[in-house]
Length: 192
Image (tube, rainbow, N blue to C red; front, side):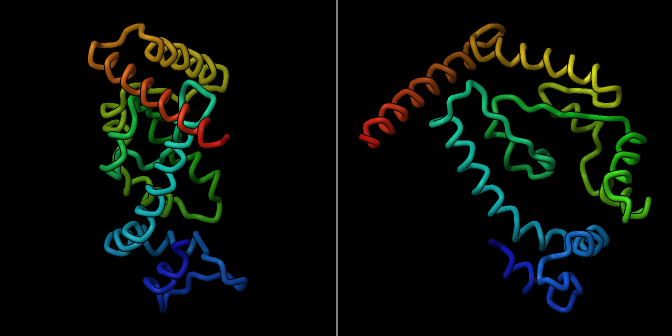
């Protein structure tokens, strides 16, 4: 847990609830109002988040029963460190008005300005769309979203099983499959 480091880093700030938990809303208003404090918080939290992410990815890749391992990472591109872990990146995007409207609906206790400040602290969605391999537009209804997700699933399964892959991607997949097989064999042997 990074709780003690956060408490120490923000000593003197009123960030605790009466129960002694970190009040994320208060901490958020502090760090989204001060880029230096946001960097301080990120320096504390990001290494731990990365460690947990990598552990879960490795567990999913080497010991999972699924063909695809997916990670939901809101600040993937902002981190500048995580994209290399993934064969494919997907950006789920909305138009800016819908983004602000949904953030306000999810956080009614935040002002419009606080919501906009949080959005402004991230890479603009237009730029993220250009950085991603696949883009899903979540501005429309659930039916349209479901159809897009199904198309992406088919695309990913096609890539996984060799349809539409470059020679380099195919070699990496074969190398990865070999590693997975060796690791799985080691894991099975270790369990006996």
